[in-house]
Image 1 (cartoon, rainbow, N blue to C red):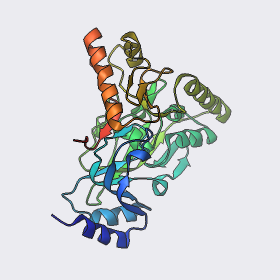
Image 2: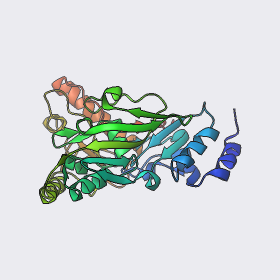
Image 3: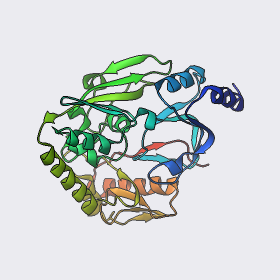
Amino acid sequence: MPDPAKIFQELIKTARGRLMQKASLGTESWFRCGGRCGLLFYPADLKDLKDFLEQYPKDWPLITLGGMANTIVRDGGVRGAVIRLGKGFADIEVEGTKITAGAGALNGNVAQAAAKAGIGGLEFLSGIPGTVGGAICMNAGAYGSEVKDVLLETTAINRVGQKRYLRPDHLQMSYRHTELPEDTILIEAVFAGEEEDSEIVRERLKDIKAKRQETQPITEKTGGSTFANPDGHKAWELIDKVGGRSLKVGGAQMSEKHCNFMINTGTATAADLEALGEEVRSLVREKTGIELQWEIKRIGNKLT
């Protein structure tokens, strides 16, 4: 097996973006807790990413993350390398009623760009924390719409740098689920809206912002919705019904404001968050017979 330190020294010679060893990954998540990763790379642009992939051992673990809005990094950390797409992949361009956005662009910024250009139908993206890449990977949704409703096409590369163009039907997108081909790294997406008066679209954005502030703990260390809604049910109602509102495990708590949101009250570990989620799932299963499915992504290893 190659020496990690030696591989790092080779990678750092050509990397133009930020490349770090044993980086604190968990504190980069919206929950602000969790473990480290072997390597953390913020590529400067597509060429920088391709150069990294060309040198990185093909049999080593590799994952790509965006804004980490819905991610728990387990306390034992993540083996191998983590690629995070940031500013170099955050461009947003408008052409007619289409918007092309880098995978590292914030969903809220895409919604704002659409409103400014007089494009309606993309406002719901402002209610989805994180980046375009992450939203596509889980077919995120809010306020009655989801990504697959407005996505025309994605551009991706694999671990050997080959480019692919994927439409929603290639990705078999369904409720909070996307079938991405193995080793796929999303780099760009094209969304379609409808021509509409800019001021009307801006008003809808204001309404969504007000609703989020009123109903969600957006000022806390949180990660968005914890569980997907089961068929015919709302996850928060099931959690509330079984006494899950404000339930605590260690420093993790189900929000009083919205009980399908977990929050780090200040001292939570990733283990606390995951244990709390599993406790809620157990309560709902025992009292209603319904199995809640995690919407929050959990990565890495537990501490032994």
